[in-house]
Image (tube, rainbow, N blue to C red; front, top):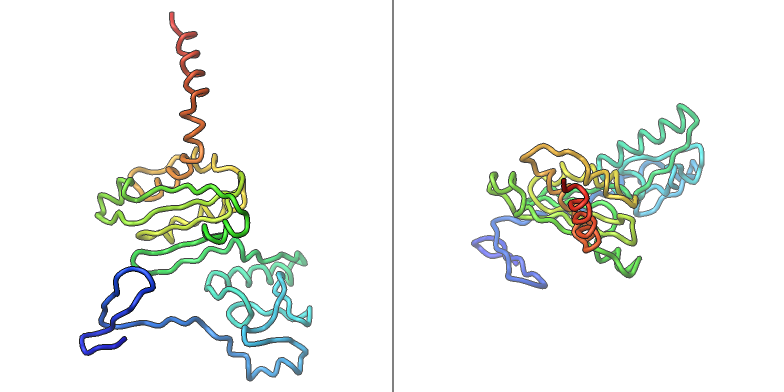
Length: 234
């Protein structure tokens, strides 16, 4: 609702939020109405030009990339589409676009970054999932910067990583390794990576360690360490 003193936003849960302005970012609409695509036999609807995973239209020799086609409308998605189509046309090496591994970032304060499934979507698709969390309140760089709100959440279905959610300052800079690990079974490569101290990237290593923490500190691991200690005694 609008009032002389500003805007009051009523939430379905929690306290109302007051502000001076309200920005409505409703997304982008493809502007293809004047292209007369029907004359070329290219199919389009209200979501844009219909394409397959190779970004081919209904006319297989015509491609559509970027915001004009149906699908995620990110600048980095358009760049990826361009690279894939260049590879297909220029080198004869068709390549599919995998939108399920496409990261997205909302540049608010704090930032929100997501790659793969959310926890809710992962539970709906896979049933049982394991959720790992690490919080910026436990990260020295975030504490020094006095900006320690947020977390990293990793969702695993069986051994595979199926989704990662990051909330906090500059988390868009931290989503890269998770994009590379999505769909893979092992967090060991990230756990074993040497990360500069103090940086926010340490939190990615911390949440990767959380996957192995039950093994590292298990009863069998302690018994093995005690046995080695006895064998090493002079």
